[in-house]
Image 1 (cartoon, helix red, strand yellow):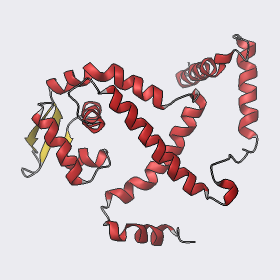
Image 2 (tube, one colour):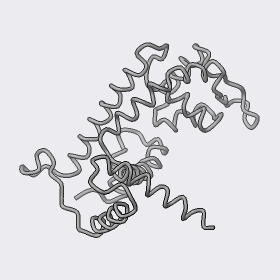
Image 3 (cartoon, rainbow, N blue to C red):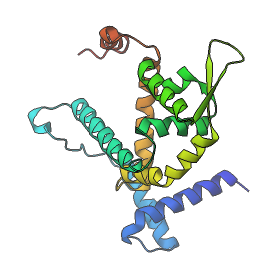
Length: 222
């Protein structure tokens, strides 16, 4: 049996069920066939250029993307703040650090800071706060005694689990009214942007030289 094909079919059925919330297609095999057919037609059709605020006045798509990303980040922070309103978490970064430690295991301080796309001073403040609360522990690295390895503690897991229902709810709200297919498309696009920016961020280029360096290496100057 081709198990991968079975998983792909089940994934398509889940997407069909999500997209079909307005009962546009019959909820049977014939509706599923029509949905797949329409999906392929839409995929092969050229996409109409969307409207963005200020487009008629010559505003660039890059400017619109930047503004929308900033807005979405602020919306997400607002929901995250609500998710931890009645907890001991001071900021959303506190629980994001714990989530990363629980998901990916122990790591050095700098690995944890870089994983969360923070500069060292900001990351160290968060780690200090987590240590003070007893939510993480630190030990000397076996490879380098000068390096500290961070691990989520039992208390940290407990604090995280107490808020996880609200945190998951907040993440669902941030995804808003996107259907399954749109979520997958957005993940692909954001992953592509992340893969572009993360290597640049990891080089710790100074603010004075950052834009100049990226322009020279990637030919962004018009």
